[in-house]
Amino acid sequence: MQKASTVLVGCGRPLRSMGWYHATQLLDGRVPSAKLDSVVEPFYMVKELGKKLDKVGYSAFHDWRKEVQESHGVKFYASVEELAAPADGDHRLGIISARTADNPKLFAGCVDAGCQTVFLEKPGAPNVGELQKMRDAAKSADCKVFMGFNKNVSSYLELAREHAAKASAKCDVTFLHNNAYENTEAELAECFERNAEGMLKNMAIHELAILVTYYGVSVDSIASVEADKDFSSCKTLEGPTSGKHFTDFDKIKFKITTKAGVEVNVAADRCGGDDSVGIVTDAASGAELAKYTMPDEDAVANIPNLERQYPGAMPYFFAQDPDYLKLKNRVAQYCVDGKEPEGVASIDVAIETLKVAEYLTPILQEQLK
Image 1 (tube, rainbow, N blue to C red):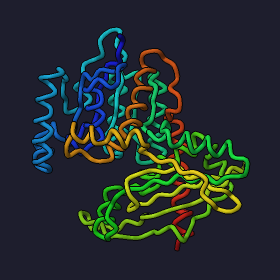
Image 2 (image 1 turned 180 degrees about the horizontal axis):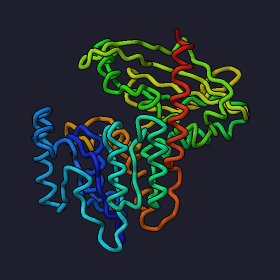
Image 3 (image 1 turned 135 degrees about the vertical axis):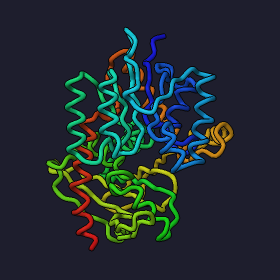
Image 4 (image 1 turned 120 degrees about the vertical axis):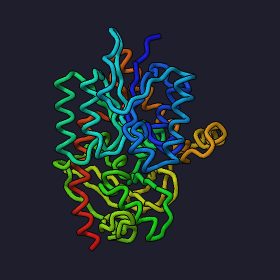
């Protein structure tokens, strides 16, 4: 069977990093159309950097690296520039799962290293301008780029949209995204600092991608946006490491109405739990008609199996395991047969999504003053 020759860029710390979980799903043979050949790890593969700044993570990574090299023959590098050219006939797939600020440089390296397809984790780049440059470079190199918006292919999204479409009366749909941070100033301050691009660019970017993909939302199509002030909260907190002040939402809910008359709601809560929910309500009465969650029942039932297999890993890996897998399988299959992967966001969707995030943030902050 033909397989995409895969390079993972940005593995990170085992059990903690999304890059490591991407590698794990590949190594376990759960993506039949892809084979992990190489890992580029710019942090832990540089002794002066990784060992000095994170000794525990450095040791954990190199223990895992030795095991993977011996059992799977995977090659490891400190930079994309060290990669050899792909073999004749190979379709090279690059999976980039690094810090947002590092993505533009790593992306350019993947294109130069002969990646014909790139799977780029959200939001892709720190700002719209850099993401547009990345898109243009990919087009010039005939490189196809897909984004890691896993909720775009999640069952809860499909079920919520289907329910609303079949309802006899007008419905409101809300896509709610919860995180499980403790509701303390110290915990939120660390969160605000580590995710300095802001909630709409990192946490709620998934929901905005849904709106761009399925509801026709763009900066040009938005007629109005209205924050739910009873639900929402915006704070300015001092980062524990830098001492800088960061203004961000710890909770936000808002309704977008497009010029075509489409209405859809987004909500996000840093301290709300560890699930994502599609809620369908009657537009006239507000009565809840249906609620669909991610993880769904099948995913929840499989969580204990994954916990036994990977004890100590981040819980959200297990909750979102089916969607991460579905997304990679669709992209890997594209590498084999060239057919557009259903529901998978392109870099153009990501650019529009980032534009919407940048547009909405000051408007919503102003409404919550």
